[in-house]
Length: 396
Image (cartoon, rainbow, N blue to C red; front, side):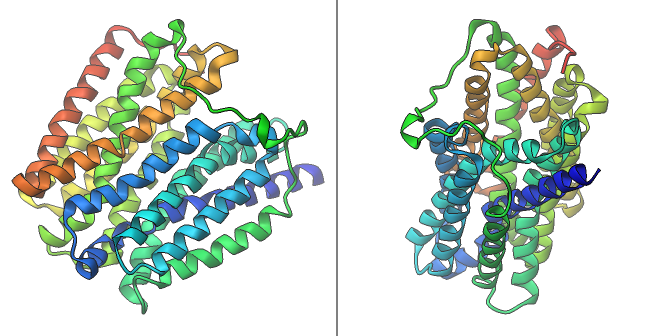
C-alpha cells in the first residue's frame, strides 16, 4: 500500500509539472489585444505569432520526438522547462515583435519536448495496474494545463498590476518549482543511451493504416484548427464585436474550450472508440455552427456554447483518432504513425490560423471566420460520412 501511495504521489507530481509547462504555451492568449495596442500590429500578425508555436512543436516532434526513450524522461523534461523559462523571459523583455516570435517559438519547442515524454513519464510513474487512472492524470494535466494558462493570465492582467509582466513572472516561479520537483522524481527509462543515437522520425504510414488514418487525420486537423482559430482570434472578437474588454472573461472563454476537450477525451471510455470519432465529428460540426452564429449575430452566449461543444468534440474526436490509429498500426511503426498524426494535428493550428489572419484584412474578422468555418465544416462532414460508411473497429 505504501508503495502504491508513493507511486500515485509521484504520478500526480509528474502531472503537475506537465500542467505547468502546458499552461505556459497558452499564457499569452488573452494578452494579444494588449500587445496589439502596444506594438500596433494587425490581426494577421496575431495569427502568425500564434502559429509560430506550432512550427516549433512540429520541428521537435520530427527531430527529437523519441529522444526521451534514449536519454531518459527527466533530462528531456528539464530541457522542456528550460525552453518554457526562456519563452517567459522573451515575453518579459518584449520591446517589439521579434521578442514575441522568439517567445512563441521557444514555447513550441517546450511543448514539443513535453507532449510525448511527459505523457509517457506520468504513466510510467503510476503503480502497476493503474494505467487507466494514469491516462486520466496525463490527459487532465495536458488539456487542463492548456486551459489554466489563459485563465491565469486573464485574471492577473485584469485584476493585478503589470498585465504584460506579472503572468510571466508567476509562470517563471512555477517553472522553477516544477524543476525542483522533477529532479526529485525517479527516472523511469532503464536502458539509457547517448543523445547521438537519436535519429529524426520520418512520418510513416503503412498500407494497413491508411483507411483508418485518413478520417482520423481529418478530424484531428479540423479539431486543432478550431482550437487554433478560437484561441488566437476570440480575444479580438470579444473586444471589437462584443465590447468585452475584461481580460479575465476573455481568458475564461478560451479556457472553457480546453476544459471541455478534457471532458471529451475522458468520454471516449464510456462512448467507445468505434463511436467516438463520428460522435466527435458531429460535436465539432455543432461547435462550428455555434461559432458561425456567434460571429454572425455577435452573441456571447453562442461563443461560450461553441467553446464547450467544439472543445468537447475536439477532445472526443482526437482521443478516438489516436486510439483508432494506434490500434491499426503495426507494433514496430506505431510511434512513427502516431507522430505523423500529431504533425497533421499541429499543422491544423498553424496553416488555417494564418489563412484566417490573411482574410481578416480584406473581408474582416467575421467574414474570415465564416470562410474558415465553411471549409472546416466540409472537412469534418467528409470524415463523418466516411466513418459512417466504414466505421473504425470498436477495439481499444
